[in-house]
Length: 359
Image (cartoon, rainbow, N blue to C red):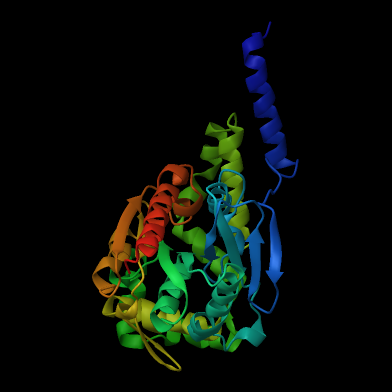
């Protein structure tokens, strides 16, 4: 006779196996409720619902291009957005939507001179012109830093850059590209994408999966080992769903990534060239927090830590490390007690500095 103590476990094993194979997934998609504040091409602005306590100091979440904006809000327990709302912050999200051939001419300039500043000004205006704390993940952190550097007139309270590489020499996975690029320049990477109008979503998805090749290869064993653990499988499923929803890059933006970031290592030199002139990172005066993941191969800790050497004009340039992969930094199982805790402490300190009149 089957031991009754095994029944719940067998029920869970059977249910999870069925859901993974035929039942449409482990857990339904659940997002933090939000309201669309303004709508325009590549700049939809949302406010997460709730009753924030510290409504006078809003936060604006800046996703990278190619990643779905819900990178900050994968599911309950994996939502930095929900955490910020629960901690009393009025929290906003900028959503760029998808990119097509017609967007091939969009570059960093469009985000750091127009899209992000416009959203930031709108958020600030909703809070009596209060300073806005920017939080960017990956290239969203890059765009946040460049916005703060190029638009010192904006009401930016602080910048948090999560998993944002500054020194691309420290990113070992792109070392072959940099080596080849010394002889060929960016042409092997950008000629075809220029013709296509950008880097299409399927290639972005394949590239991101390649960075987590070990995870992809060991997934069957991972599932078998955790078939009894519904929460662990739900986390896996949310990451799989995220990778399947990754979007493409416009041609100009992708070329700038290749020429200036990957091959030119422009950020570690402290200067980024735009069609309207250079943007200098040393011009950032607001507090900055850079967070690097100990298991991040896209933005290794050394590449992220370089921010403290470059941001010489910042009133406070801090670096913190946290366990996790590139996405795990934002939405991993330890993010709440590491990455999110670092952000909480930093934002509290940034508000205290502003209140005391320290710049």
